[in-house]
Image 1 (cartoon, rainbow, N blue to C red):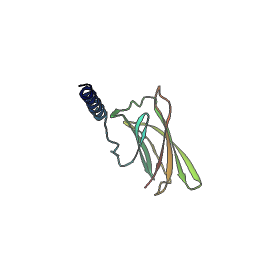
Image 2: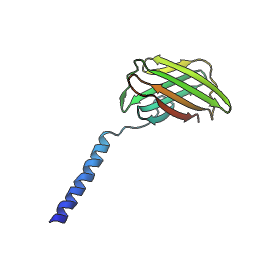
Image 3: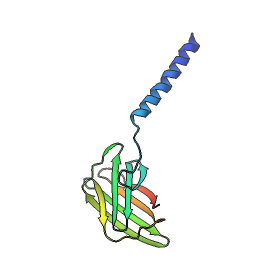
Image 4: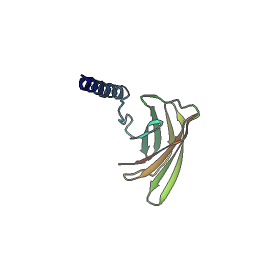
Length: 126
């Protein structure tokens, strides 16, 4: 009888864990044609184009509050480095201009949301 009780308890524990994990599941899919990087603050989607840099934040399945948000993207092309400051533009942070973004460009995005520590996301343009 004890073995059956232990087996039932173990089965319920595994089932409850699987169910709880399923409740928090969300996809890490690019919704804006960019590159998605998972961070502690949520998913960051970086859209890097020669005339536009955008950063979308998905706060674990809900929109992030962008009040006082700051972001900087550093673009790396071989030994060449350029820094881009992004500003809040609706539901994202962005910068418009002329940027050297080609296949193989690497980058580092640093995002700071109000009341939270900065997060860093590394990416490469494919």
